Image (cartoon, rainbow, N blue to C red):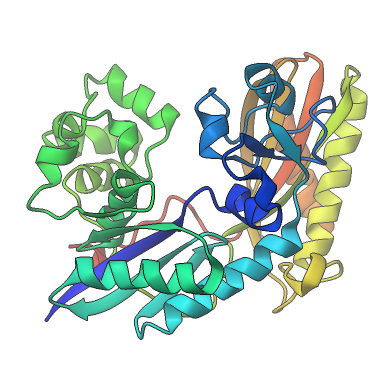
Length: 363
């Protein structure tokens, strides 16, 4: 039997949970976000497929979502409900006998030895449906990268296999940011080097990319373009790689002295949570299983109307202490050159270096 990595992703998870709780909403455009009032500031957490047809998507302002889809039903975020259903989903996946690595409320990687990965994937879909009445899509790959990307081709409620054999055919002509791990900024920088597609990135000179992106990240980007990724599925309890807080203000903050005070307050709140003084609801905060030292602090600023920028600052040493985290947050804030009115502020601490790549687990 061959070893496979499967990626299970619940379709429109949060919206689907709400439809289960409110069956009368089935088939209607549903938008979940904030406190459910589109007249107030907030962002979309998720939208049903019916709402997405109107251009509504995650991260969008609720007010814009209401303009795009005025007939949508807006609901508040109910974290406890989603966590409860997520636990049922993961229990159903573990009952399959596969190794399950939870990576979020609505997704997990599974490691399995089988000669029929499609059949195993359909069995997973049936298990999840029977346990929760929710649909999921399953991606099949020889590593996590392939499985994760395959899921997107299987949506909704489908199964798709992406391997080294069909990698170039499926992804060769797609833009570089189609790859999991490459964002808009990296794609833009690659485009400046004349690299716009996955095929072009696969053919790029690792040395040239190392000069542009650094000795680790540059060659890693070429590996991504060839479909290489981590093969190990670890069933150890999921631990987030970052933790933060953000606030959307109902009135724009125009005084940057007030912006500074708010960033300092958020940084102190996050530091307290890291130390375990204020774990999140249900004991799921970073302090629930011991302090989580931070290595970097990132500040997020969303200007009016909806321009978002981030800057980060590395800490001198890993810590949960409030003062160095606060100082790093204010240092990151100083890097923002715009002094426009602000509608959202966030402070996030990272627990591990996001630039580190373990090539030993890639093939």
